Length: 179
Image (cartoon, rainbow, N blue to C red; front, side, top):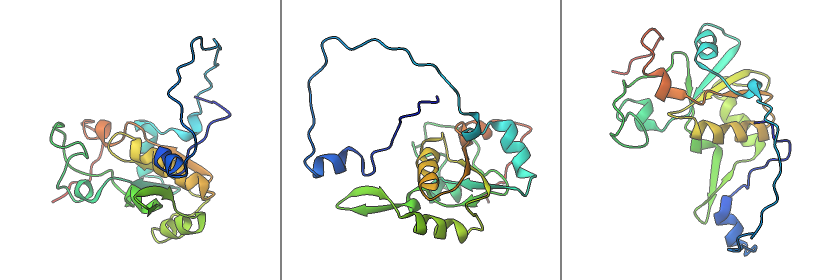
């Protein structure tokens, strides 16, 4: 949305509390009213049309970020059987599970080092100057990987936020079927 002063808490709330940083349950009695001007950052979002053109364009690298059961066709989504969608993949995608960019300490997830993230991508032929589009099922795991790649110095990264949830239902769009 274009907020210039946003961040991600590496390790999340679990790391915050593990380090005994303060928390508050206090609810402000009268929040200050303010305005926020939306400034969409279109250069970090991919839509179905861009994804379709990226499939045929060797300048783009597509990362499928889904879990292994989704990648190999055992599951439709990470949410169980509530979704009745075709199983498959977006053609030409490299598969890197989203949590491969994370390290765990005391059951708390942190991003791996920029060097390690670049190494993981390099094994798939993905480099810091490539045009990259990430997708998963609904864009959440791709968002995590977006942050990891940006921290590692990747410059041109987009999230196809509608991801497989949209793509699977697009009748005239190509799909790599899983046998």
